Length: 250
Image (cartoon, rainbow, N blue to C red; front, side):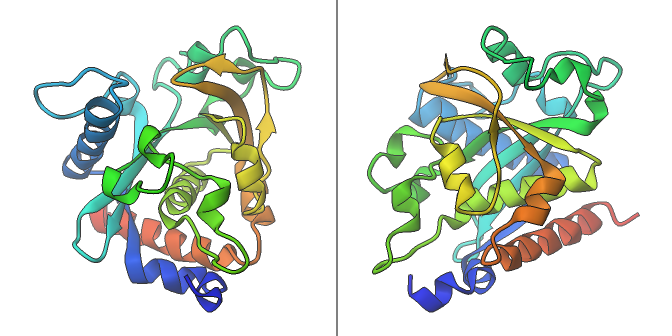
């Protein structure tokens, strides 16, 4: 990637990819198939299923997001935003179950927050053809120091960042104030490069590797984004808006 493209992330992104909100049964099915390919077939984190779809109890009350490659029209990755369970808002989110013994409730107690204002970002998955750098083959999605290159050879991890931004926009449109995420410990440093503040809210736990629970403020993200990343966010936000209108015109 040339430096001028790094300074024009929105233009570079539009050239290669587009975010698609997966609000229809057909598009959600695409997300489940990607997750099966990555989580079940490639990584072996979940059992292989006869129907080739990976889903769980949280998907029924989640918003899903896809990213499509413009070169061939195929979907390259997905993520989801887990919302509070309708009729049972205090039912634990995935991270609350996984991190029950390590959450520091002096920082935040998710059960004490208005549950309709919180959500969890999870099930990020990127197809293997887009995870070919060293070390990426062992993770469903990767943002590392190498993802941003260096001053002589700059680059940008369009796919994971666009998926995160698409999910953040969907959260903002759904009245979500606080996002929770369970990630590798070093993710906060990578997010800081984008101007996103991530607050760690507990100790490390073993969940497909070492993971730590963290939280992010939706409005804090929108106000704090690095100026280079803002045009990319606007491009992704426009696609989310367009996709939502197209699938649900009324």
